[in-house]
Image (cartoon, rainbow, N blue to C red; front, side, top):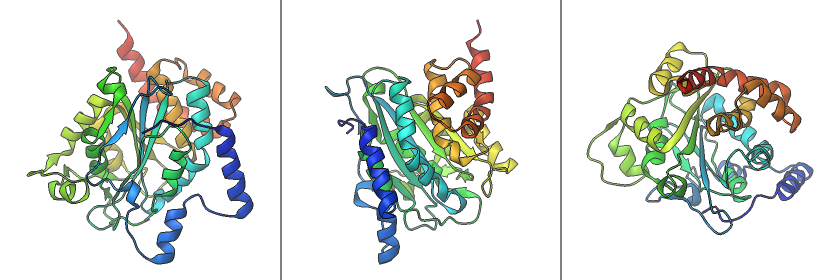
Length: 312
């Protein structure tokens, strides 16, 4: 997938039309709520599929970026932020040349123990199809109320069911961002994998193992919005830090998710060496100053640790 081109003009026209007609970008969510049929959209169904990010004549040096967010409870605003700021994210990736030929996949996660649609995974796309995929997500808003969601299933899918030419052909890691304010379960449940993703797993996988597999393929970050229900929980933050260390990003403003993704990629690519200067560049490119400041604050610890490791 990912053979088309991003058009900022076409995206803006879409957004203007939605505003004028007072229609939601999340059309599938509206259809589910109207019909009562709580099922995953066929094109977002992770069962029995591999999501591919491939080079092409149009995009000869593709870079894979997967963004998978929690759609339970207080996290429901994040996909709406991603949708409204998608244009500015693509402008930063493309115009500032943070990465070559970006291809973005969107997905959503809930709780496999109690939600009707606990895992939704779109395609890697280069053009407006990524906006279409956001519109196919069911914003279930459920969750089990026990400070756990099934992030580990999203990590499993990313580690084992994503095929990326940037990694397989060129030896470059893709990017994976999970976003949520609760903890992953301690193991990847083999029965849930077989039912929701497909396969013949015969035993559970410790979450530490599957995170390690993901880190071999991706520059992996987990973003915790701290103004949500459990975002300030010491237990939640400690659990993720034990898995990812400084790659856990504490974000004061969930509206700054896109800015955080852009800054993290710029740091990894070496495009941004100074966070303050990078934040100012983003403001000059049209990003909101307060959101950009929140994003920079979230990345301070990662930048500091990354800088120390780069020293001889």
